[in-house]
Length: 475
Image (cartoon, rainbow, N blue to C red; front, top):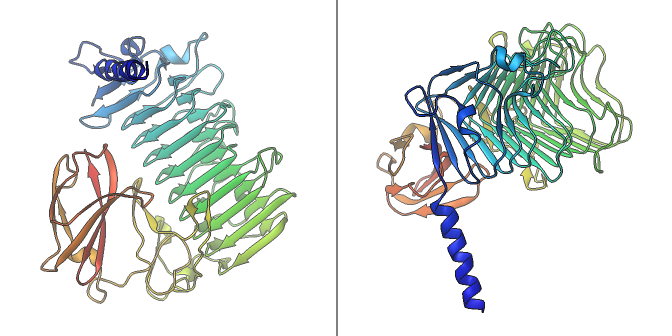
């Protein structure tokens, strides 16, 4: 009986694997629009969308689980039009995703407008969504996530711009996450929300906001980040900027609509660069009843006429921050053009403190740096860690910078990769995911990445002289 049952399980697995289908959408394909394919897909299928501009497709509802929906040959643009705008029955946005464990990759969502002013590029209604390498342009909401139990939403390597609605100011945002368990928001560029929208708003119990550029430059947004219901939130390595036209008075709000999330209400803020380009304002506004505010190794530059921190926490653990009413003394590369890398002589260099703590597996000591646009690179912490989102490294003519001697090609790659370390004796090559977990090790300069899923990985090359790091993209 046990053998028969095991055979049945294997047969079912093979049947499901064999019948997972790949659907193609494109101007030269059988299916011209996503709305024609969505009713046909089954659990585990893949939908590949050819690079093109798709205008005025009806709202697309994805109901199946474990889907991969991916743009290929470039980033296709799904541009909403009058059909979605006038749809009184559906009226949610471009994609409505109610299936579980769906991945959406390399697609642009644009101009989602609906009757109730909540038109989303992606409306998330099912648990566990991964969005990566996408762009959200001029939607009333870029991503709008509903109240979903046992849900983890991950958004990475994506850009959000000009979210909001002039017809309902203050209630639409670049990205709006309602009550879920966990949001992981990393390596993104969310900027210039309009009509008093937030660049990022999340009611998740756990928020991990890591290595992003979250910025208002010229539009009239509201808070840069709003976490209105408390819970546990970790902000590491972000550039967080308030522009001169922002309608709100502070950059980060926490618990200001009631501390209704799961306790404890702890806010961990490390190695971020906060910039206020208004002549008024404050930086952090927390609700009374916040358990812990941990604030270390941050730059907070610009006017703080309302105070640096508004509100009090039961425990305030704050040190090794640089606070200045002016931006110029911080020694940024070009603050006027939004470049907050450190220049030689910056007071932030070697002024930080090492932090060994991690929160649910996410380290408070940064090991990466946000890189424009929607990318990340390894952080080479020289001497004592620098304060802020960037680490100053001496110019190539002075410093022994690892990247100057490391060549990895081809990059991107689909199979074989070669590493050249310019005469050094190769000892070991490690392939790691972006959380630093070792996936595979090699002892030769030629190796295959065919076994890896598409995405970005870190290559750690150890030689007799030093350790080199770089990123590689698997097609």
